[in-house]
Figure 1: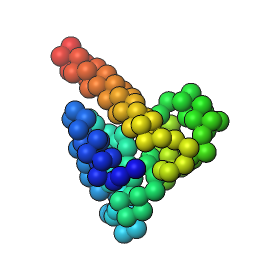
Figure 2: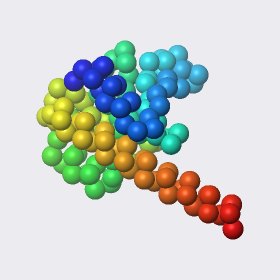
Figure 3: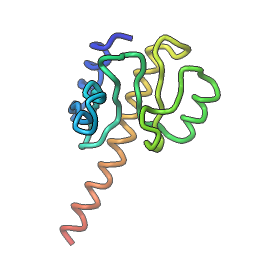
Figure 4: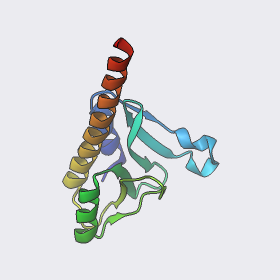
Length: 125
């Protein structure tokens, strides 16, 4: 996995922004690059230690991946519900990692698009 290819893939998705927001909590998190859609995280990795990526998934997908792949583990922050960490250069090909990132993007985009629509509907009524 190449860091620039992964970054370019993430920012090529519609409406994606990137930030390094966690340095304000602790200097050791300055190098965490986070990708957002609709102001919500869907993917992040450490640019200084580019050995894994953390992304959102579904409970069923997480269970399946943990049962079948050695590369899947707990996210950097264990309090992130429905997130997984995927280690590079193990038993998940780059093509599947890209597919899982796109799925993560779709999950977050769908979830927060619905919330924004319902807020607009409530304000009109």
